[in-house]
Amino acid sequence: QVQLQESGPGLVKPSETLSLTCTVSGDSITSISYYWGWIRQPPGKGLEWIGSIHYSGNTYFNPSLKSRVTIFVDTSKNQFSLKLSSVTAADTAVYYCARRTRDPFDYWGQGALVTVSS
Amino acid sequence: SYVLTQPPSVSVAPGQTAKITCGGNNIGSKSVHWYQRKPGQAPVLVIYYDSARPSGIPERFSGSNSGNTATLTLSRVEAGDEADYYCQVWDSANDHLFGGGTKLTVL
Image 1: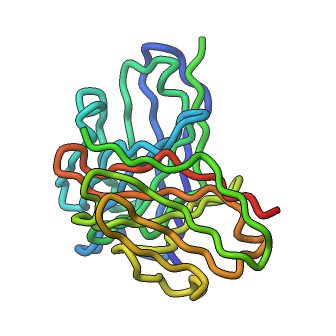
Image 2: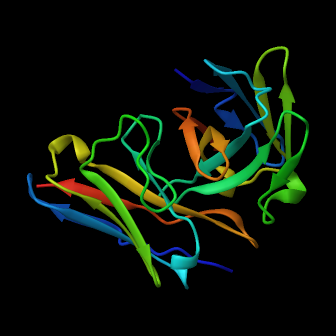
């Protein structure tokens, strides 16, 4: 059974960098068939895709966030990570990691709440 | 930019049929996926490529997509179906795009 688990600080100060890691179990992050992605949901709002990565290093991002987002893979730990720079209160959200097969996201983590506040 | 529109809420009595819509310009030309999210749980893919059901999803869940509306249909609704439901498409300009979500309430 594929499982994903987000981890990282739950509180980040404005203008700093948000960092989250997703640990994958039950599957190899080096599987050629999958991309690995980040999706978030601000309070009271809908889901917003942030970006995705293939273990080969190929990445693509939501145009609205692209300038602030970095996603990278650590194959030795079967993990992938998100960095979002220059955060503001608008970046407060539940952040999900997920596996993408072709088009849909077929497995998701439970989500991690990140609050941006001083 | 492309926009997916879902009703904020749908209510249905147990045993009845619930229909959750996802509107978008010519959405029938796109592939639509549906997710169920219960509080504190990971979202679950319930329908993909308009009408396909992943392994483990009951046959009570079905999907259709035509024209400007995609529809998720839950037949014989149970209390355990109460959740938020989201539609999603891939759009060339916005990549992966989600609808605003619909809260299904079982009366």
